[in-house]
Length: 157
Figure 1 (cartoon, one colour):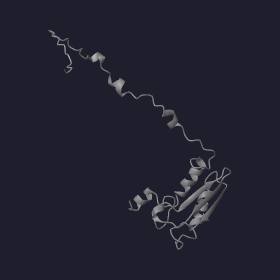
Figure 2 (tube, one colour):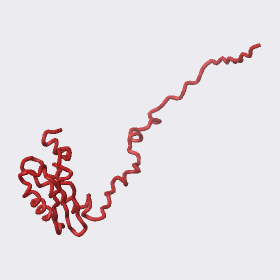
Figure 3 (cartoon, helix red, strand yellow):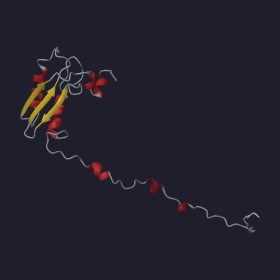
Figure 4 (cartoon, one colour):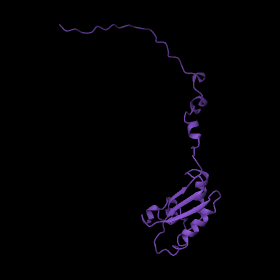
């Protein structure tokens, strides 16, 4: 013998209609599109704490970088910072600035004058007590050291 399930059939005359949605029950766009509380909002609004003005992000450091961006290579219409000739900027809390830089080639026509100009410009930044320029040849400069802005200006992007 097989066990077959038993079904009961119930006959009804009508089924009540489901409740219709009304305008009052709907969420307003203000409810659905209103910006919810952003828990990162306060965190993202905070500025990073800089130990002293000579660190990246500090006023003195940024002023030195801006001064470097005002010096242009006479053969290339791009400033030496975006050109990638500046390898490092170190500014101490007492105002000593040390710039490590290179040139496009040791035979560059401004090889004798460019480091002096960098030293004068950096030394003229308010807050810099003493400026020193260290000219290095290793690693050698290459187009890969340029910023995207410099590449765009030279039509290399």
